[in-house]
Image 1: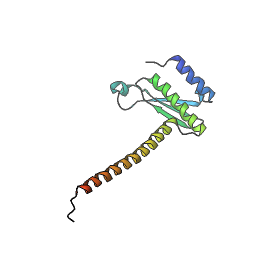
Image 2 (image 1 turned 90 degrees about the vertical axis):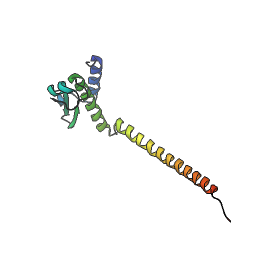
Image 3 (image 1 turned 135 degrees about the vertical axis):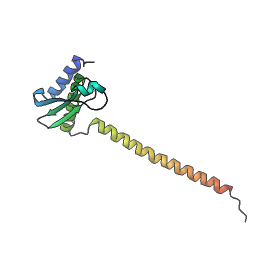
Image 4 (image 1 turned 45 degrees about the horizontal axis):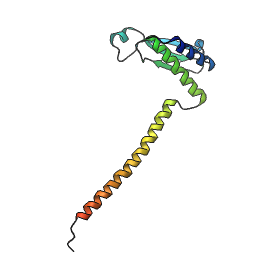
Length: 133
């Protein structure tokens, strides 16, 4: 399934606006690894891009199609360069950190609930004991 021309044009415009030009990108094709069977083993569908001015490298083998991988690799390269340029953490890293924080909070609450239920059970057991006084 090829990439729609309007999507490609939009990506080219974004890259040009950010100062990333095709002439600055070295593109090479290598054989993919992993799932895909004979098709992957015989064709060079993995795309590797190097942005010479920044030295940023991207490798993409998401799809069996070279055309799709070329588009995705360019998009990844753009996002990576923008993240470096803006000095921000990538959206993916921010999302992962947010989930990690949520889980940490969740586990603290769960621990409090668990300790409370342990105390409650201990009290019940303590009340069952017969005093021989």
